[in-house]
Image (cartoon, helix red, strand yellow):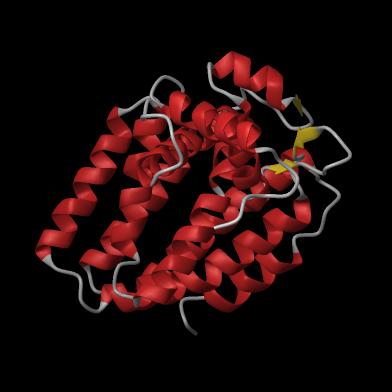
Length: 266
C-alpha cells in the first residue's frame, strides 16, 4: 500500500507511535495499535461528554485541543477524534477555521427532540403495556427504587443509569429499529434533563409521581393511560427547560405531540 504524499515515512511512523504509546499498545501501525488508539479516543470522548453534560464545560466554553489534551493527559491524536465525535452528537461546534465551542442550548432543537420523543415513546409504552410481565414490574420497580435512593447532585451517573433503565423497560416491546431511535433521542435529551433538574429542583416530587403513575399503568395493562402519563412527563421536562432558557419560544412540536399522544387515545 502506498504512503501518503503529504507525509514522509518518518512523520507517518511518528504519528502512529504517538497514538500507540498513548493507548498503551506496542508501537507500530498494526491492528492492535489502531484498536488501542480507538479505545483511547472513545475514553476521551466519554470524559469530555460528561464534562459538558454535567455543566463543568458550560455552553459557550471555548475548547482548545492542545489545552484539553494536557488537562486529560493524552496526545492530540485521540483528542481530535473525540472532538469529531462530540461534533457529530451536536454537543460542540468545531469548524476548521474557528475555535471549538460547547454548543448553546437551542430551543428549536429541544422542542423537536421532545416532540419526537413524545410520539415514539407513547407508541412504545402502549405496546409494552399489552405484554408487561411480573418480572418486568419487578425490574422497573427496582430501577425506580434506585433512583429514589440516589442523590442526583452527588451521584449523577448512577441516577441517570437507573433512569435510563426505567424508561428502557417501559418501551421494550418495540422492534430494534424503533428502540435505536428512542435510545438516540434519549441520549440527545440527557443534557436537557440535567438542565431541568438544575432549573426546577422543586419538581422532583412531581417527577417521581409521574414515574410511579407510569409503572401503575403498565402494571394495570392500560395502554391509553401509559401513553398519557409518559406524554405529559416528557412534555413537562421540555416546557420546564424552555421556560427557564427561552420563555419567548413557542414549543409547537412539543405541544402538538402532547395534544396528539397525551389524550389517552381518545
